[in-house]
Image (cartoon, rainbow, N blue to C red):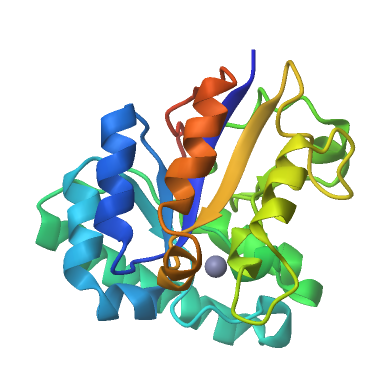
Length: 235
Ligand SMILES: [Zn+2]
């Protein structure tokens, strides 16, 4: 059996409602990470996702590399997105039960890494339940203890850009790769994944319905999508 939790970054986009409709059709509840500025630009699309049962977490306001910021500037980025998400949930009429966080680019803040983890814990951010992830490097890298939500597999589809050497064939090759340079093999028996996909309108323009192509393929391969679950935190 292969199990996967789907996470989708950088919402919201014009394409977000179409992605959400597809996920609903397939019975998949995803964890969406909000880039604050994109939520401001595409407010109704973000509300749409919440109203249809997706969970929306914090991915910072302006999507900076946290290692390039002071600790205080990083906290300000998180809190500005937090305020937007509180308003977004109110606007959608949905109770906000969980507050997961993901660092842009998976950049955990360099020299301030420990301070950011302590901040996330103190402020009651929710850690995704990742106890079933079987890869030794997950624990060796401390990802089983970090509060932020990392991933085990990155589709890398955001690399599809006009003029880029990266092609759709590269995405399929990565999906079949039994020994990837980073992360864990996607289709190996016994896998348990946190999948990273993005909601970029630019990708939709390059490869229409890209999310549907990839997820349909995983469903055909027997991958079971699991609901996001979190460790409860003391508040
Ligand atoms: Zn991002």
